[in-house]
Length: 108
Image (cartoon, rainbow, N blue to C red):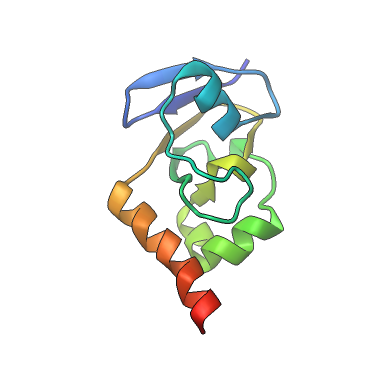
């Protein structure tokens, strides 16, 4: 079974293969920030520190929200499923920047 290591909380969650990062965080108290769960708000943006090859393909909602940030191993936890071990982190200031991207697009 894959492990999701959350650097911010120093927790490691043992999870089912092909399971969702955000759902596992909610289920096991991992504390990944979240709001909508649908790939719209950007609150659950995480940096994949290790194991990016152990994730499923990037979803259209992630491409729309994150754009070029995907190249730097950022993903939306609500849209991402694990196939093997991963280590991730998040930054509240960076999350605010990602959330503002949505506002800028709407107002453009």
